[in-house]
Amino acid sequence: MLQSLAGCSCVRLVERHRSAWCFAFLVLGYLLYLVFGAVVFSSVELPYEDLLRQELRKLKRRFLEEHECLSEQQLEQFLRRVLEASNYGVSVLGNASGNWNWDFTSALFFASTVLSTTGYGHTVPLSDGGKAFCIIYSVIGIPFTLLFLTAVVQRIIVYVTRRPVLYFHIRWGFSKQIVAIIHAVILGFITVSCFFFIPAAVFSVMEDDWNFLESFYFCFISLSTIGLGDYVPGEGYNQKFRELYKIGITCYLLLGLIAMLVVLETFCELRELKRFRKMFYVKKDKEEDQVHIVEHDQLSFSSISDQAASMKEDEKANEPFVTVQPATYYDGCINN
Image 1: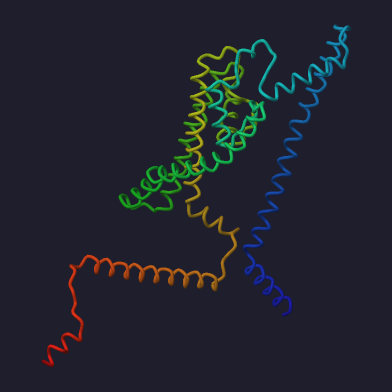
Image 2: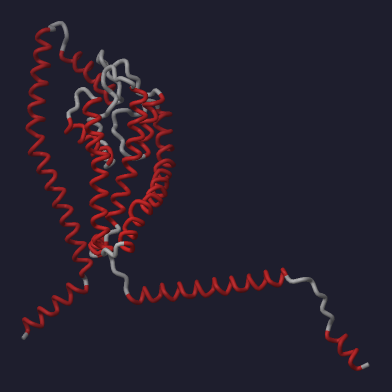
């Protein structure tokens, strides 16, 4: 008897705080996913890093043996300066000295990566004035970009998602839920094909040292706004039509980001995902809902009364002007 009562009380406690329990499991699952990613990346990449370090040590030792007149300290100073310049996008290699990082097309590409928060990191401002302007430009530009993307996606999704789903639901009588799922899958497949597979094939042809996997990796890293910066197009030696190529990449990033947001918004409007998200949200109490409803009703009533009063005032203002004689005058006339 006591066990059944305890079980019932536990079930009631879980049901009462179901949202909190779901949120706790969500946080735990996210932390476990972070740890899982760290373990996989460490186990996969650590051996390659070790091999690269050993190779660099051998090259450095061989170079010092072949050039005895150069000390190790002088070599490290030179390499340190070269690495600092490389972090700013400037290379001392002969096959890369012809590409400027701050011509108009490169600056346009940099501005697009800043506003879209992609930030490859291959080119950064060198001067203090450039760094200060980058801060001000980002503070204003990033919210402006979010506003722009939200407005564009809101208009596109009406014609791309809502109207087609509603058409098939009304015209053919299919279930709106099933039509929405099929439409989301088809739209996702078209977006992946047009903004991942096809551009990856193009990049693998335009970039000499990129294969298809590396090109697809760049597309995903860019459109997901991760922007690691290990692969940046248009930075190769003797790149053909480099200015036009940079402008095309800038347009590709903006259009691809819009397409990704449209697909994400389409999936977020699915009923199943809405129910799944509500599991982790804080549920409002009924008393709060009633208070909000009452406040809304009072606001609506006051606005309606204000509108009615303003309409009456407008009607009175539009009426022709008539002089009304005072009541004492009529009383005097009657008495006479």
